[in-house]
Length: 157
Image 1: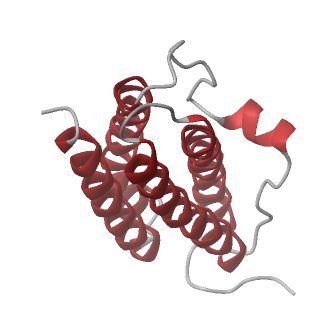
Image 2: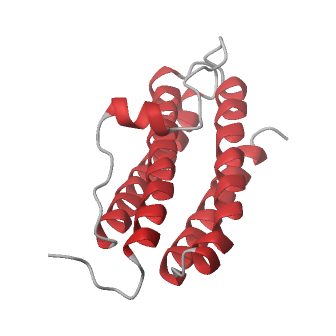
């Protein structure tokens, strides 16, 4: 059945396309955070192991929310690693060390890149595509990433 929510099909498709890129970035960031959780070494191992676990759990909830937002617009969410790698703006590369500082710097850079992308898209969703709901959704997502970035940044002081 066709979705009839007061937004044109052309606009919902455009929004879904942008959200697909966001869900891909979230997936890659979640996997990189899991990698940090699995492979962290050093005197702060236990604390950082738990810290990274909390962050990837939050990211996993975000992935689900973004995918469900795509579905609520009447479109299908990407769901394969191949699709995520094609859509993401992030890289899988990381530093050579399994230290807190190395992982944190890498993950912080990815969070900041996502924050910039989200911030740039808020007005487009609301004004260009006439989708205030997605604009609000992205604003909340932006705030969550800002908090996660702050927590990562605090470890580097």
